[in-house]
Length: 202
View 1 (tube, one colour):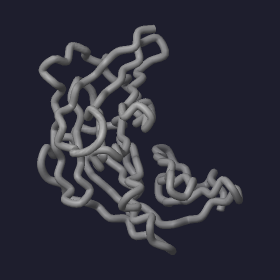
View 2: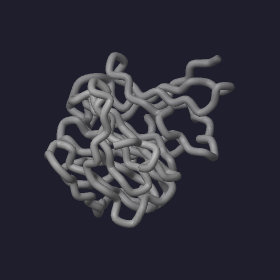
View 3: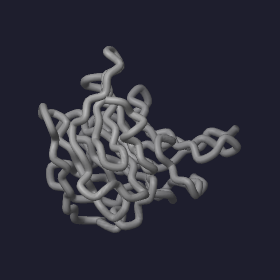
């Protein structure tokens, strides 16, 4: 399958570290790309066409492609074969992130085993993928760094987890500082308090 007829205006994608494949949600079609064979495979479809505001990540432990934005949370179970149904998930807890998220930063944190979303400011949101409960994580009281606001176009992939540093990196602009967010000091338990943002000046 070619990609050109499946993109639409608001595509999102995420890299799967388990298979090395890329999963891609176009306006309607949900696709899987195998770079080794350079082939696209249709795996599912979005029932009404994707609206604006979404970004995506993959939970490699549970084999879920998760997409957040446009006032909804959507997942595909990429651990299964064949055509995958799209599932809209009802979440609880600090659920304001669902309605407020628009092209937010999102990635999976293997230490806390959570999906982490940054939507501006000094706090992040954590999603438990077993219970679908959101938790707002404010920075440590000692935090003094406040990241600049995300650009109007959104954050997208400029918020990423770095395994070797156990930290998230945030870049809002080529003319801005680079920010690092430490969710925990190191190994589990995941209940360790977040330490907040740090800055790397240009």
